[in-house]
Each structure stands twice: as structure tokens, then as C-alpha cells.
Image (cartoon, rainbow, N blue to C red; front, side, top):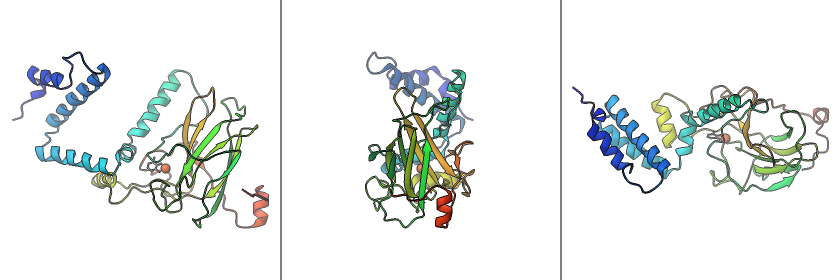
Length: 281
Ligand code: MBD
Ligand code: FE
């Protein structure tokens, strides 16, 4: 027979003491959040009849996850980061803010401060013998008017699916650039076609995914932050069409409207047909 201790006044009062609700120090917001987390935690322990063994396993998991800095990866894999986007979408819709490129998650692998250039950039350091990729686009407002001087901050993985800074074999800011749009709102990048990301197989996120019977793969993709004075910041991605994980993304980041076709060009004539004659950058 189980005793629903959380429903006794004494336990509830104990947790109010723990979270400091009975003193007048500290942050009221923090106290309210910690109190709620503790209340909900004891509910889970009781309702799910969590054993002490399971409890200490969870504590150990948090220690190991933190030691590997995988908290950001776990919240992506559990769909919590995607949930935040759905919440923002709902708020925008309620406020009548419609149109534009859909947002999607940032993920845990952004690094601020990438090299900045005007109009165009070469993103790869030339050491990865990948397929050259020419990426170009135009930043426009919701009415279709070009936005000059917008900062397009983009980052993506190499042909092994790994990111600079998180893969020590890559050079500083490899495959990470900030490009300022020209008078027509346009930007152009030369890079290499990325491969999809996979969670580290020996990591704590994959450990949970395995226990859920799930893989930890993302389709090949390119991340974007788009910002300009007077406009809201956009976090988005292009996910590459044809990837086997396009609609089976462990982080739920693929969305309708965020799929990019990759056109593989095999000859100089075909390159000219696509307007790629004399690309120098
Ligand atoms: C990634 O490259 C990524 O984009 C996300 C969302 C999660 C893990 C790795
Ligand atoms: Fe990514």
C-alpha cells in the first residue's frame, strides 16, 4: 500500500521551507520555480513509484551529462527545444504575426563571433575534400521587400557531420560565417555539402535514446540566424532534401518550408546554366 505523502500538509510545508518561500530573501521568481519543480518531482516519485535506486541513477546521469556538456543535446532529442518553437508560433499566431520563413531550433552547436564579410564568404578552410556547395539567398521582409544590411549568421557540419569547436580536428570557425546582405538583400556563400549529424554513440544523450528505442540522427542541414535593425531575430535551418533522416530527425527540427533542394552539377556547361560561371570566392 502506498502513502500519498505529497498530499499531506507537512510534506508540502517542508518543500516550501526548502525553496525559501517562507523567507523574504532571494529571487521570488526563482523561489516559485524551484518550489514548483520540487512539488512536481515528489509527485513523479510517488505516482511512478520511483525507487531509491532509480533516484540515484538519475542523479548520476545528471553528473555524467553535465561532465560531457550534453544538456543542450538532450533537450533537443527529447523534443523540448522544438516545443519552445511551437509555443512561439502559437504566440505569434495569437498576435496576428503571420508569414515569413518558419523558425526552427538553434540546437546546441552555435558559436558566436564568426568572421563577418559583406555579400559573400567562403566558409570552408579547404581541408575537407567535400563536394563544393554554392549557397545563395535573399533576405526579404514579410511583404517581399529586400532587407539590405541584414546579418546572415550561418553554420553547418562538415562531411563527417561534425562542427568546428565541438570537433577539435577542425580549424577555428570552420563552416561558420556572418555575411551582411547587399543592397538587394542578397548573400552568397561557397562551402562544402554537409553530412547529417549523429549524437556521440558513447554519450549520455544516445544512452537515453537507446533506452527509448530511438536513433540520434539529424538530416544534413544548414543553420541560420538572420538579424537586422528593426526586425525580430530569426533562427532557422535549411534541411537538405533527399536525406534519409529528413522526416525522421531526432531533434524534430525539419519543418514544412525549410527543405532545400541540392542540385548536383557535374559539368561546366551545367554550372553555366545555373549561373555559376566564374565563381571566385
Ligand atoms: C545538431 O547539429 C543540431 O542541429 C541539433 C538541433 C541538435 C544536435 C546537433
Ligand atoms: Fe546542426
